[in-house]
Image (cartoon, rainbow, N blue to C red):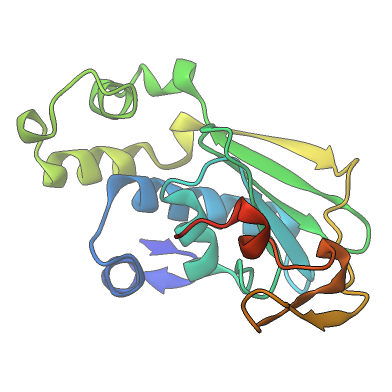
Length: 186
């Protein structure tokens, strides 16, 4: 079995190396990326959207050139197990998602995703085997056109904060967000 151009052993090794452990969400996510890549075709410079923060963004980062750091991956906090790969110039691509109706045919996958079974009651090897057996049969896809392109906001200048002395985007005002009380630390 080949997933994202990798043998199954390398597929699992890459997941463990990047994510720290092999998670069912990443195995399923790898299958989703594989299908989206096949649909979008080779030699397309793609951007990606993950509709959850959980596992799926890592699948995109492992198996595509799209990362949060290079700005080609956008992560939405919608908690929908869905992703989209699209041509960054034409803004056309494919959305792939875990289809709950289809997953009911694979009770272990459905019960795992819906958290209807305790982790200790469903051995990972059994769940991995079911995911790999189901492959695309628990997924759905649809051609999409991106209506709201995700554009990077240009930095129009850099200032030095009078509060902390660090550089920050001038668009924030006279002080950086942290010194204005919007920081995430104290």
